Image (tube, rainbow, N blue to C red; front, side, top):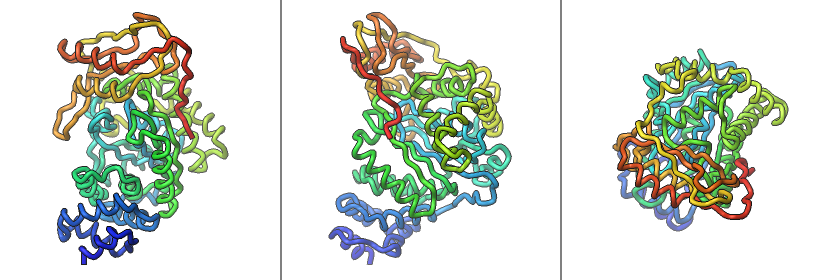
Length: 432
């Protein structure tokens, strides 16, 4: 019977929910072998999935394990997802900001692998911070303080975890319907009524072209609508690193600076935070317009309420709450060196994957799941595309553990930077 389902998909047919359940849930139970599921995944990759198939697959994966029930909460519930990119520390700021503004977020995030960093790894830069919470612990915390920011529960959408590992091994990761189903299965299982999606596009994101990013955004919002969730997707630029920092403790430090009323916030990063927060407040009915959502977000940052919510969240999850006032408590690398511009002109490119590669070389990321992360090391990005620069002026600041890493970092960063003699237009962070 399973072979007939595979053959129908191979030949371009549309599968029913029952047939998809037989494949997916059979694989979770161990009744369907991985070689048959691999063949089905390749058929899906080559022939695509209809909207009905994609929605059914998403809902089947979401229901394959534990789900969070947020229906008893009085405040509006929202889940936020970013497709990831170099220097993306958005959740560290957005979650406490939205919670301070009256939205409940039980946010689950992942670890980093390859060129993108993981929110969980960044949070673990904070001494004592617990990222492994049970569903009951998450619910208790959001009832008490309105938010939590934790690791992905192993019992949440287990079918997705199994299928993703097989997609990785069978070169079927890049299928947009499969990507969309993977993302949204975890969002549906998370229980929030509103879903805000930050779809990154550019050299520092998984979706490098605007066309593919737009296709993914459409697929994600169609699933959300089909599942009865209010869903909104924003396309944002990842053609350069986001913000000032790439590296775990460095990014937490920048998040704290962004939350501080008198902090040093990167203009592009702050603009993204304000835009996403305004969309969330409007979606959830807390503000009648995006403009008033912007004003609400600005007030929460200016008053210090968002920073206090971050501090409250850190303390609730076992972390040292003093870090919100004293970021120097975060791990610090013993060696710091500046990488300067080789000529005067205007910054035309800061290639995000080269910056990410430098951070990996320093030990800030992992290329294999079992790799150990050095939370202290990373890169500060002191300029943005469009900025003027003088020869000899620092463009990057390297935070390293050993002298041998510094020379390699300088070589890699040299390839990340392009300076043009003529002015270069800055790149907007919000594309649509």
